[in-house]
Image (cartoon, rainbow, N blue to C red; front, side, top):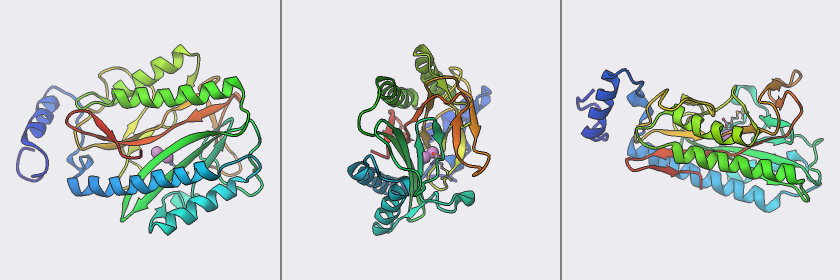
Length: 278
Ligand code: MF3
Ligand code: CO
Ligand code: CO
């Protein structure tokens, strides 16, 4: 491993990985450690991805359909010489995921689905630019939102921030899920287990899987140069989810309670991490 196959990775990093591996820890394959050139590409994709979400924020309002959000995402992305990763991804029919209230994720934009006053919606955007992927999502509160929905939205953002703070070099994937679930459970919320964050950058979904539930010190070690998402899905009620039996995509809470999600793409550095989708 310390041979010169990857001159871009510091010798000290390779040595530490080797030591950890010897001690039985799970360390990433070198293919999961991005080169400086790849990081630059993902950073550029991230800038466009953030601008897309900013554009959605500018125009989202009660009475519009989720198809109109899809149009905004598609047109803005294409105007920036980029591509919407969800489109035709494993058969997904639209350019963005729009998930309202009890929809957890993978909601499909439709001209028949209008935003109502009091709704909370997650808009999940993934941009491909020059072959590199960046993935992020935000919640939007439409008009006058109940206290419970506002709290869920804000506390879920806090869950993402707590997860990012736990994503330190030489910590583990389990540390992230531990921190998020400890906080969410203290509020009585359910943490979705079936879906999670993921390596990203050269492809849409890479290893490792980032569970939002975890045990301290378990799972893959986080090494400088890794790029992945953290994207907690937090339910106001129970953690269980069901999939839409007609469209095969949309995930709902099984108890019909509201759900929120926020997502960032982050880079593990030698001193901490950097959010690539700000
Ligand atoms: N953007 C989602 C994620 O965070 C994945 C959406 S897959 C799609 O991983 F096909 F529904 F777009
Ligand atoms: Co996403
Ligand atoms: Co993602």
